[in-house]
Amino acid sequence: GGGMSGEEEEEEGKLAEVLDQLKQQRQLYQMDHVGKEVWEALLKDVGETKPKATAQTDKQELEELEASINEVLESKEYQMTTRLRSAEAELDKVQSKLEEGGMGSMSTEEYEEMISKVGQLQVEREELLQQGVKAGAEPAARIDGQVLVEALRGMKQSAAEQRMCVEEETFAQRLSASQFALFRAPNDGDCLFYSAFVSKLALDTLKRCRTALGHPGMSLPELEGRVRAFSNQELASGAIDMRLQAMDTMRANPEKYLPGIREALALAFQGAADVTSQKLRHEATQTLLPGRALLGEEATTEELMALLESQPDDELVRVYTAVMGNPGIFGEKNEVLALSTVLGRKLHLYYFHGERVDGKGVFLPAESFTPSGKCGGREVNILHSVSGRHFSPLVRRDWLKKEPKVQEPLEFNGFLPPGTAGAGLSLKTITEESGTTHLQICEVHKGSGAAAQHVLKNDVLRAIDGASLSGKTMYEVQELLLGPVGSVVRLELERPKKGKYNCNVTRLPNQQSTAKGLLKGVTKGVKGAFSLSSA
Image 1: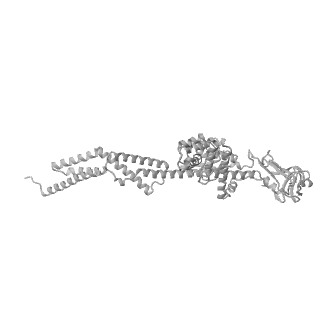
Image 2: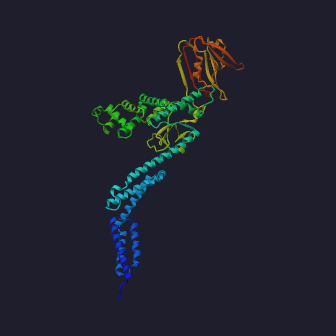
Image 3: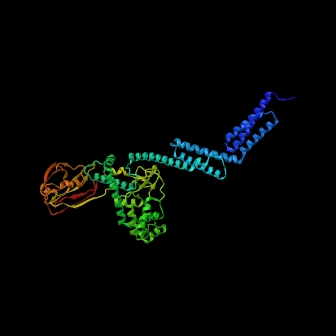
């Protein structure tokens, strides 16, 4: 007989055990919907066991087992299961990286790519689950792809804002180094009016500089220092005052602002979600639809839109200015127009980031902001930083020049206090070719104290009571010359060919009772004069 030896029987028994284990694993794997790697490992084990089989029945069983595993791997159900598991694994990786902080330094482009990827994985997983694929995590343990997308969007926004802040800082440095001084405004609804007030301070300071006698001009740091010397409370009060002046301007000339006001009201009445629009709807309901207001009901869009046709223009202006006159309410298009009137200088806005498709301002890349101070062909006065959500006024460096091309006239015309008199002189400003500016006497009034001391026309006034006139404005000179009737003022003068001389002039009363004058500037070819007399 050809019976098996004990050793052969032992090997046959071991092979039977291995075959049983492989069959059990195959059943368990199919029940548990294991992944591709597990199935491939089982297939490898079967392939390594086949050469050890000697009995025909064992060989046949292993071949059948191998065929059934391949059938699983090629089945549609298995393919869908694999896709589901892969999607969940990728979502898990993204969540792990977020939790570990591994995505905090990506660029906005990388965030956008990751957001798109997570969104696609989320959609794929939901589609597979709807098709009845049972594999994957339990519902309670599934990662919410939408939550990941929102987290990534937040990080992308932070990265974008950080990048914009860096770009803006670089841009601001370039502006400050070339053509402009950049003043940051607070990040609130008053930022535009704050900016307008800072511009007013700067222009007033420069105007004072230009009317000063012998003033060497003003550097950009000097101007910045003077503006920044104002306290936060003073700047905030100035912003409120600018807002109120803008509203008064709208009410005084409604025809000019009505188109913009109608546009803003229509946007608000149609349901815009911003705070300003909400307040405009509330104000219109309270004042123009009292029936709705008494019932505590919100007016419908149709009712509000009908107000634009039924209400007088002054009522629409009143509703608008009643809301926009409150601190903290953000304004833009109409307010810029009104502030241009208040300041006497047309304001233009430049948007550093973000697209403006509503015509409310200029948007071009930073490179389009020319050294001459124009963007999109227009002179820019205020920079709108979308990254910081605030306005920053720009003060042009060429405003600092001592001899501007255009000099705005300054007037003073007031009655002198009783018992007050001057020296009896009319003065004008003269600027030499060298740039030196001084006061020259253009008239000596008859019967005045100056006439009694033989002061002559064309004499140059250098000092009053020992105080040099260099750097003084006309108003300060006026204050020095005025005094009580009968008092004496010491004048230091200079006469061509004679040189410097001093004289004591008695302030005498005469027929004139006002101090009137017009100062047109200190530039060459532009002269101003004023006369001082007694009451």
